Image (cartoon, rainbow, N blue to C red; front, side, top):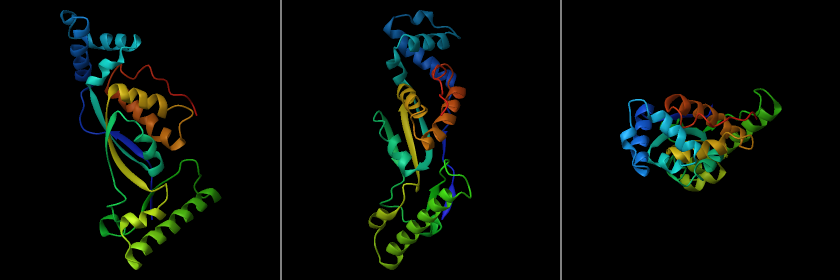
Length: 211
């Protein structure tokens, strides 16, 4: 069994300044103020529409993110309905095969310290699940979609999420909050920081609360 850390990253090249200009060009049709567009007017325009709560304009730009998380966290991510997803399928992924190394991969829980009794109990539970899964597939001839019933919530999954900027703001408001699951915050907080660095203005008003 492999153990890895969770992660999330923006997929593909994006031009934050061009995104702001796109939003401005589209948004100004509401006021017929296209004549006010200048080389540096996009940032102030976008900041103002966010301040006024006119966030529907942000729906005209989208970003894709690749998540590597456990199955439990992925279930929370895909609850965001205004988004598109592709995710690794436990029905079709056969972890007994060579391309998976003949083993399962689990996401390390950040709330158990290495070497602690809790961590060793967690690891042992995942290893037992792996043993049962491989036995069902290899020894009893069960299909991956049948054998997956013994797999743990900590099983690693990969998924891509594409959402417009308004939905990403909603995502970060929920998933970086103090009430969010610790392993959700583990990926959502640094992801928000990446959004902030690559797309000016749109996310700068969102505050990260200490857990």
